[in-house]
Length: 321
Length: 293
Figure 1 (cartoon, each protein chain N blue to C red):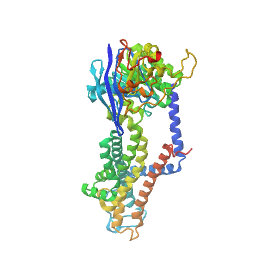
Figure 2 (cartoon, each protein chain N blue to C red):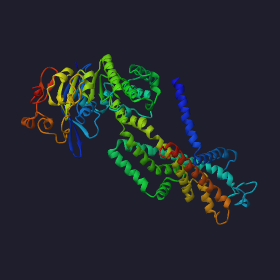
Figure 3 (cartoon, rainbow over the protein chains, first blue to last red):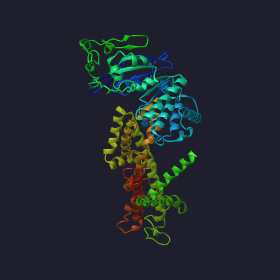
């Protein structure tokens, strides 16, 4: 059953230089208990998509059109106080850089308790007890809820953030680059923990990253974004072994594979496009090795290969030939 | 075990604070003077009560210090030393209450203006600018004249005119705090603006407010003295400023009655100096940029 349905979402930013089309016509479906990876280079609209789901966009950002359904509720039609009830209770977030996502002058336990008290009718004492339980869940010493953030290491802070995200038993967690600024060992621990917890409580997870290899391990499906659009969407196997879009292909070959022959990873030439004046037709065409005239003129449609696998390219899979 | 370590650490932190405060000569002088003044003005009037309306004998007017009257008598035959004790109480009280009003207003305006931003910010900051640039004395004179001269009105007037600087400082700190990622996280939790301002921004700007408070107290005491000296004080209560006012009116300076105008003058200077010393020393201890290693 669908937990989250995003239909034709368009989020634009009005800045002095013009309108930035940060998210332009994005659609996907996330089922209950499913985890989806959102991947793409910097500035391709991953975080903006996430913030749109929670309606947490900065002032300049506006959702121009589209629909976001959480189960049966259309989030975009909710007013301010209704959306506040949904935040954290139904959709919680793990932020980029846990180091800075905690208030430095408040005990960590109090910050978790604050989230619980805001949404559940419980006393402070019960909330603290719940925080202790959550600390056990994320494999932290329960006694340390009375510590301040500066007394935690980076990995511990990220664990505390995960505990906080779980505080109200949400249906969906959006993890926005949860492992940035952590070393590789801690990254693996955090991702395994997230994966384990997600399966235990059967909630949806959207994992945002620019690292495809991380997503392959933790996600059921992957959406590849480029310049505000989803260019390919499919199960992990589809994306890794059966990818059709040249960008996905390039993204996969831009980091070394330890199982295949040794060679220097190929970069993707060019720079990410300006989203105020995006390229005509297929937005990837200026950087695409296989671009033809039609790519400049006509925007490719989403082509469905099977139930779960879509891509948008005029010459899907051309690189296999 | 954990908690005992934490207690130990907290103890150590407090000890370092006390140690660096003790090694700060300015702070020690200021603190000592203040404690003496506060103790004396709390206990003094109980032992040696003073009544503004109780005048002395006609032949006992403007007498120099003697055994009976340590600091002599004033133009109405009242004991100057007793007057000084009672006056200290009022001066300190006005200083402290006016500071509370000023800090409350300044912090509230600063945080709201910085956090909400947009039009609210523009409106509030223009009001703040108004209070910053308008000449202070004429404004206070007009306000005091309109409101009338009771002690609470004086407190109100001083409080209402001295918050602008604090508001500016707090606003700029709020602007920096609100851009930190944890504020975004708190919004994602579903907290409303009030919670964010009260629970998350206020504690983060509090050290600034605290350092400002002590300095504003000094200014408030000086303001009260100025107002009273100019004749806008509360006639029913004696403060140091009122003493100076009466001393000036009765021509104490020209008749050489130094015991009438010197004591309140010196007291005001000492207390203001003590608050300033204390303020600067706290700033030195709490502000990492100024901290001596």
